[in-house]
Image 1 (cartoon, rainbow, N blue to C red):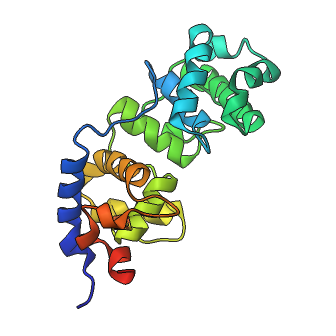
Image 2: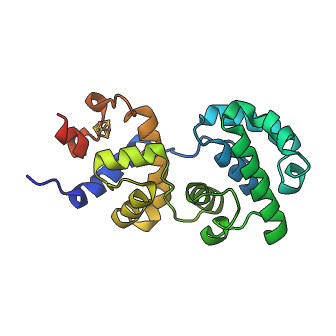
Image 3: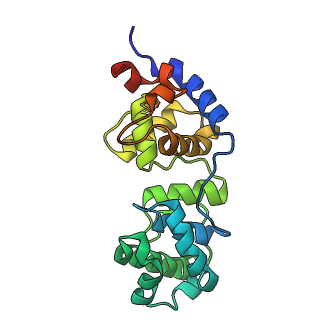
Amino acid sequence: MRYNVHMNTQEILKTLAELYPDAKPALHFSSPYELLVAVILSAQCTDERVNKVTAVLFAEHNTPSSMLQLSAQELERYIYSCGFYRNKAAHILSASRDIMEKYGGEVPSTLEELQTLAGVGRKTANVVYSVAFGGDAIAVDTHVFRVANRLGLAEGKTPEAVERGLMQAIPQNLWSASHHYLIWHGRRVCHSQRPACGECALAPLCKYRKQHP
Ligand code: SF4
């Protein structure tokens, strides 16, 4: 029988909601600006590590104006353990500069404006828009990309293609929740190297599992 993603989408989302009723971001933040910085730091880094770094950084610098008091080298020393610290420091400082110069010191609340900030890519903008401002968005990180492709929820070779596919497959009011569901499922069950298909509640609905029984 031909695999039909539309028949399965509702069931997959229902199961994910039952599995992860409390799915929410693991990053610690207390303002849109803190979230923006934490998301920039989280690229290729665990949320646990980011939380340790931001606990120290935000105690002293948690607004764009105070962040801009740091030189790139000073900021790099705070965030060194997150990896890719040179790029991340440059992105944090350039985004902070844009927030001060273009948006009066406040992180903008629309997806379009967030994407105008230097150093802020589409994924980061989506997360901030959805988590800090309650907008409907699906940020496609490595977990969302992998799990969406495996399940057959949205297939694509690029994060942008998967984002478009998910937005078509999932009702808009569930975009943000689905983003968290897919991340949690990727971390806990559908691992990159050895997905735990034998223990996965989604196995009967999963395209990858059907192809790799
Ligand atoms: S059945 Fe396997 S591949 Fe499919 S979602 Fe579950 S863990 Fe991932």
